[in-house]
Image (tube, rainbow, N blue to C red; front, side):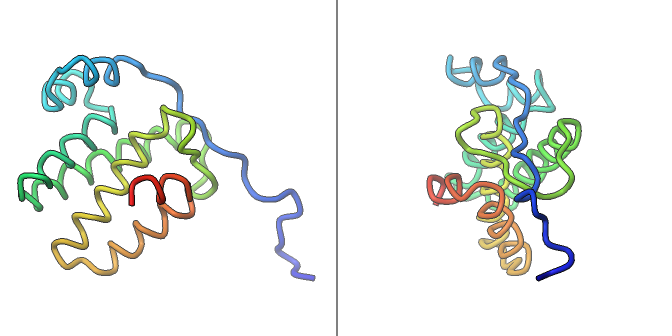
Length: 137
């Protein structure tokens, strides 16, 4: 028997509070840049900027946007009681901005040859939400 084993099954899932404003603006056609400027703490807006930059071949720009969204998400997770590990469920829609930013960071890191960061972020995504890792590819 391992002495450090968590008999309670690990930390509970972290559910970020809902902030529908950025999501609604993006869904309504507002540019991701305008949403990020109006809601700079929105991981979703930064993840969308990262996706747009990656799609047009601006990989370094994508990396910077993704890193911003990732760090904004980490801040939000910590404020929600996250202790550095544990589930961040994809099915809870407010978590998706962070998970998308994490995926975008892994993708951009791989594209610029940051192998260790790519592997770390990919594993972090799988550990946080296997469903997100599957959905986002």
